[in-house]
Image (cartoon, rainbow, N blue to C red):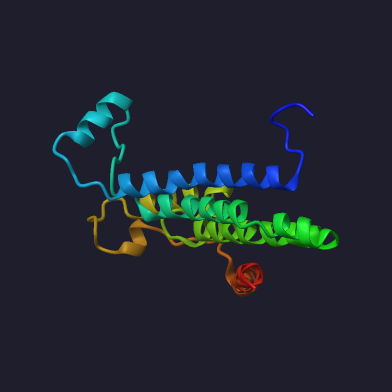
Amino acid sequence: MPKGIVNSPASFASHAQRLAAFLSVIPVIVGLVNTMPEIAGHQDWAREVTGRPFLLVSNFPPKCCYPPIFVLMMVIVALDASVYRAWAEERPSLAWLGLLLDIGPIAAAMLATVDFRVEIDSIFLIDQITGERARLILDAAERSEGVFYGISFEAEVPACLARSGVWIIPLLFTIITLFFLYNV
C-alpha cells in the first residue's frame, strides 16, 4: 500500500491522535488571545492592519467564541479517545456502535450550539433566517420615532418570535443522554 494511507487500526489511531493533538492547540491559542491584557495601541494596530474597524483582539463575546470552541473540543475528545477505535480491535462486531458513541458528543455539542443561537437574545437565529427579526426592528423603530431613547427596553429591542418552546426539554434530554452514553 502507498505510504500515508491508513492501513491498520494502529496507524489510524496514530493519525487520529496526531490530528487531535494538532486541533487541541486551537482552543489554547484562542483562550490565550481571549485573555490577553489590553496593550495600548495593540487593538488599533490590528484594526488598521486588517481593515476591520470593530475587530476584537481580546475579550471575545462569549456568544461568538464559546460555542464553536465547545464543538471543537468535542471533536478533539472523539478523535483522541475514540470508542470506535478501541472496539474495532477488541469487539469488531460492535465497532459500528462505537462509531455512533463517538459521533454522539459531537452531535450533542452541535445541537447545543444551534439551540444556543436560537435562544440567545442577541442572535435569534430562526428570526434572522426568516427575516422576521428585520421586520420587528423596523416596526420598533417606527413605533419609537420621536420618543426619547432609553424609555423602554421592549420598545427599542423587540422580543424573539421563534424559539425552541416546548422542544427545549426533549432537546436537553437528548443532549444529556448523548453525553452520558459516551461517558459510560
